[in-house]
Amino acid sequence: MISETEENYLKALFVLSIDKGEVNISELSKQLEVKIPTANSMMKRLTEKELVIYESYKPVKLSAKGKKEAALIIRKHRLTEMFLVEKMGFGWEEVHLIAEQIEHIRSSAFFEKMDELLGHPNVDPHGSPIPDINGKITTEHYLRLSDHKKGDKVEFMAVSHSSEDLLKFLNSKELVLGTVLFIESIEPFDGTMSVSYDKRQNEMLSSKVCDKLLVRGAEGNS
Amino acid sequence: MISETEENYLKALFVLSIDKGEVNISELSKQLEVKIPTANSMMKRLTEKELVIYESYKPVKLSAKGKKEAALIIRKHRLTEMFLVEKMGFGWEEVHLIAEQIEHIRSSAFFEKMDELLGHPNVDPHGSPIPDINGKITTEHYLRLSDHKKGDKVEFMAVSHSSEDLLKFLNSKELVLGTVLFIESIEPFDGTMSVSYDKRQNEMLSSKVCDKLLVRGAEGNS
DNA sequence: TTTATTTGTTAGCTTAGTCTAACTTATTAT
DNA sequence: ATAATAAGTTAGACTAAGCTAACAAATAAA
Ligand SMILES: [Mn+2]
Ligand SMILES: [Mn+2]
Ligand SMILES: [Mn+2]
Ligand SMILES: [Mn+2]
Image (cartoon, rainbow over all chains, first blue to last red; front, side, top):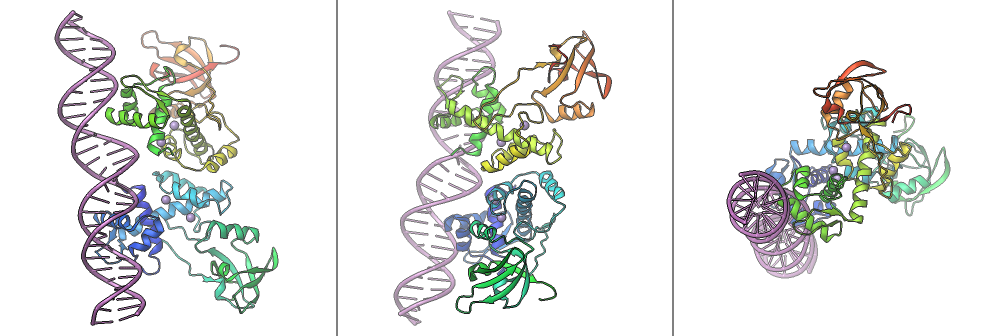
């Protein structure tokens, strides 16, 4: 049996190891807001349970088993977020903390029912992919809006590392997933973009915002 | 802050003290499936927190504060059960264990949303009353079906101490809340009743079942 | 290549929540 | 009224999950 705390560690390991495939204990402890020795001793326990691969002074990796468990928790988290938004009327900025708790509910029927009622969605309200029932996750590789140039037309597909503040900002600009953006101009000095879309014209987005918006080319414009 | 474990103790104290107003530690430990010393030490902790009133060798009582907290947890439990049945399509026999977990989710917005989507229900799927947002609970005092006599016509209002097995049995007899029952006859030896209702005629219900069905007089027949 | 800094480890302490064993108080039966 | 049984208490141990303090290893700076 994997405890709620252990589940949170697995999830943190999963998201932190997405690029490098491994995680330093200090990163992990920062992510989970615990001290380094706490994370250290948990790594020993998860090694015992064969959920992580870990040797002294080396970075931590998830085992295949650990990776699958983590993906299944993320599945529950993202299904929950989708359910809260689509079926209960919450805003996309309100759902993360609730999902952080509900992801630990022990009832496969509960999450299967959500999945069914939602019509088996493959992304959450922030555009992140929902792993399937076997823990397999298919990641689309979107570019950042900030990687594009003047005149590009792109579709807003996902928010990366979405904070509540960022999501509220996007609400205030009526920027929802699926919006097609046209880049009118880019300020050379600080990278601020002026973009137009159905709801707004010449809206200014700071480079900090543009870094978080994941997009794909629209109309054959990759 | 009240922990999940403490919440479960408060809830158990609430339901066990409904009649007598107080609870023996041994009853409590049985209900929660812990040993007597475990319940005993928890009572000390809840006394510290002023949630219960307790002196050595005397039965335990909930304080006003403890009673309110307990009622609010029961509110979340019953709203959840109602939501699972009404909005997610679960059967009334499937929801208790899930609600047992979800009742501890820390988000008033989550439960307020459920309440709203359900149209502020005042009973759960088993006919038990849902306490209001202030923890006030209004209990209807129904009689048991077994307290009635041949020829009585009654409405099925609630199931008392519903187990999954009992609820499945009622499913098999198509006996849902609101059904109007006519008592055709009662076997003097063991109290088995023969009842008729819209879906079935002369259905036999053992006295064990009749003890659990809470009813009120139908058509001015109190 | 030493030295300083960051990162990781170990040991030992804490709290919540559980247990068993031994004992005490209350209740019930003889 | 005394003995037997049940209920409640205390002490001591355990695990999970956290912490701090002291030390060791690895990495970065000088
Ligand atoms: Mn989230
Ligand atoms: Mn979580
Ligand atoms: Mn229930
Ligand atoms: Mn519970």
